[in-house]
Length: 410
Image 1 (cartoon, helix red, strand yellow):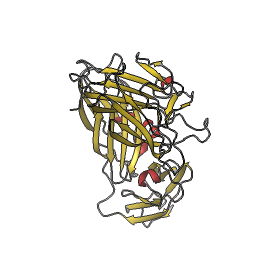
Image 2: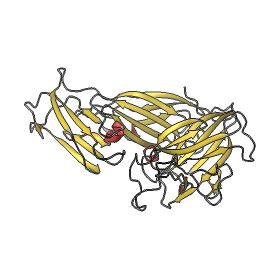
Image 3: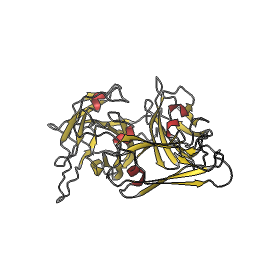
Image 4: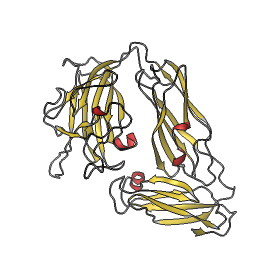
């Protein structure tokens, strides 16, 4: 409780942090409230700075003290203890209290890649006083178009800086699949608030996109259940076996990935739990005398072994973080604790974090990329990044019919 001279004067509060103990994101996570409002939700200092011993500063918008004449701060433990390096309180510049709600910094839509796929909507919210993460939820978003729309869920919400937050929403296909045509995704007015006690809310914003899945359709090249036996998904897609004892024919032998991890926990965000309960992973040595980085990969061709025709292909990689506490001693418990690299036909996805992408442990998520193949083989590689070993649950590769071009944005 910080005493101030006036209950009508507006002030700004500057909080300074630095991580001096832990070395990886996810090892210290906590909340901060100011005048009863959550201004930093699940603050992870290392996730913000990227390095130990690097300062991170949060500055509030203009606020006034309550009737008690103090600015009240609380630091609430999450993972490990909350911490603080310094506080600065200043009189706010003239102009009165903050009355501006969050603005939309960017608004993108990844349309579904098939008639039964899900759309992904990513929104960046900006506000000088910070974003109240607790106000972000699935109800923020509405999607309209020529046909019905499935359930909308919030996949992730992350404070990317003291003044910005990114939310990713998932929109499921309706029963019977998407209807082709023009759609609009709208962030509804009044849903997302800033971190100042005034709780100013956002204005509405919309983004148009087009779904076109009817002409031709994509053709499945191969589906692989990495680390598990043959499995038929609920939609009828057959995933071929790829076990440690009998690796898939497209698995590249002689690398570090001929290891399998199994956990029978139920998997959220899917009805195909078995597809995620067995995973191939790369065993990265702790040795510093060699280049062992847990690398493994696949050289994908047509199911009959013939060369892929030149053209565009969609790669869908399936993940779930199943090496979790408390059932696995030493297992993971938060985002940032597994980050590895993925190579898809020469393009690298650096430090992919399954937990962060899925929003929780034991929860299914996918990474989708479209690539061009010219040499008859689609190359996939997985290797160690910032921390822990690389892993994958399942792989799908689809040949894109040039007439279809699923999910084009407008």
